[in-house]
Length: 332
Image (cartoon, rainbow, N blue to C red; front, side, top):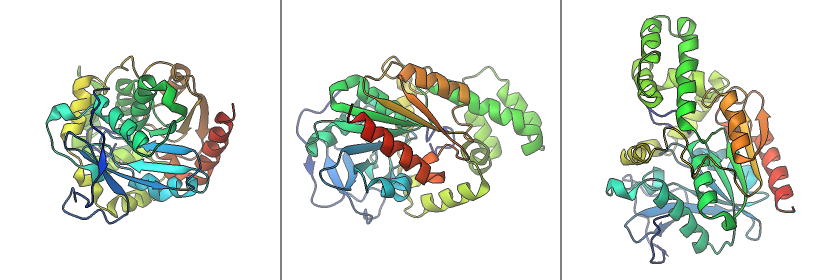
């Protein structure tokens, strides 16, 4: 999600069992001083994860966006409140954040990411998971639910849609529509980029190069200047944004997950599903959110005065929606 060219913040399993390492691998030249452990996979990847909350409560696995963001901001916002009700599993996906890794490109992508989650599930002794995916993390959640439907108790999707290409095109259109007022000096070039015969991924990347990440994300991601400032400060605390391997985005792009919706993420999810979206977000678009809810068979809940990071901008409303939904879903 924090990638300059990808504004989404929108199995080939390993047979040998994982083990927890005695010392953290210190992926970015620092100790993982914020708690948590590492789970070693047989292909050399060491996954950072942390579990918090009542030990006997339902287990919610949080899947961050990106591809290539990390779980820190969620941990320090809505996650802390959810820990009063649920057992929360936070982890940074392979190649991202505290799980930074620079192996071969073939070791990245959807299948190994899904299998990492399932290995964590098995490692923690959980029969089933409640999946919670934000932005591109919702795509991962849908892929996991398609691969292992019997291991999914419920799903919470956050400001996302299975068709990433449509979401990226929505962002291009949103910036194009406001360019005359928001970016008058660059407006002509914005209109030219938006009209190019190129993929939305390429056009959005060109707009980020032209306008810069902060101005772009202010208009796409957030409901207010204050929300962006607070989120930027939170992201800066641990310094994890610079830890992601460039191979993460490249792998998902190669596999087609940054274009039209692949069949393993564009189908109805068997488990009860909730899609929470921010009214002020321009990352996905209202039409695409509505279509996503229909494709996933999800209940749709809009949160006013919230952007793409609903869980950060309106944590109380988000936690209430999630708690009521999950508790209801688990008693059906």
